[in-house]
Amino acid sequence: MAIHDTPNLLDLPGIRVPIIQAPMAGVSSPAMAAAVADSGGLGSLGFGAMIAAEARKAIQQFRELSAGPLNANVFVHRPAQADRARESAWLERLRPQFEQWGASAPAQLQEPYRSFLVDDDMLGMLVEEKPAVVSFHFGLPHRHQIDALHDAGIVLLATATNLAEAAAIEAAGIDAIVAQGYEAGGHRGMFDPDIEDSRLGTLALTRMLAQTTSVPVIAAGGIMDGAGIAAALALGARAAQLGTAFIATDESLADAGYRERLFSDAAHHTTMTRVISGRQARSLESAFTRWGAGVPDGSVPDYPIAYDAGKALNRAGKAAGQTGYGAHWAGQGAPLARALSTRALMQALDAELVEALKC
Image (cartoon, rainbow, N blue to C red; front, top):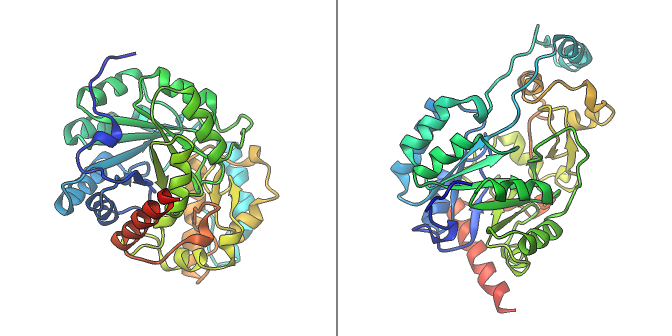
């Protein structure tokens, strides 16, 4: 394990409250992250679907708005294995879904973005730009990537969904563990998406990791207000990461259909699905998730190749006025969502946390 002298996450300048805004690719914006940072939390940007040049521009936009700390998140999934036969069969299975909206399925599928594991440009950009924090989802990067980021003075986080993943994160010298409970919205951070998911909830996972690891634990999943943050802290977390709570903020990139569904009955019926992207992810219930409920996991192409089809189907549906095919990720706390500015939400969370800690 490399020796490094990066500061503890909560010792970073500007962090006054134990709140991390989750790095939601396609939803988080520089304006959202800046408002969180200026409110004393850790703002985040998701770079999993970006190339290095786009990510650099987003960091620069954040810095034009705030001098606070930024968390840059990357996806560390195993690179997709193309399987033309399975992909062709998948497109044929999806064909009626496209046709009902007057569209044609793509002729073939492509891998829409690269894993950080093989993205030297993204690593070089992060070392140059030096965001305060870099976080990893879906696994761990190579040793030389960890060392390069640490040598640049960057604090590193990684997601764990179980104790074995947490042990690997700690052994790799990562500075803090994001304990992602099964309640969390968006993609499960499992290192291997094909093994059985332990489905540990946020509270149980947070408590176990707080007692078995020597690095700070950040609770994530189902936390929507100050009382939830206080509960996570009481179980040993050093901070809480909230994602769904920020989807309806003014600065969110979520479109009108996403926001409408968040405040509909669909919020009470979130579900895990693999058909949208190729990996299990918690979504608001939709036409796509209902269709996918009867689809065997083995028939879905690798992540993110399957996402290429999902995105195309979403475009086809939206063109016909149907919003039920988007990646409307949301956690089980979705019914508690609030439509506020990011600054107003942060003020509310801070006040609620102070009140909860008095009890």
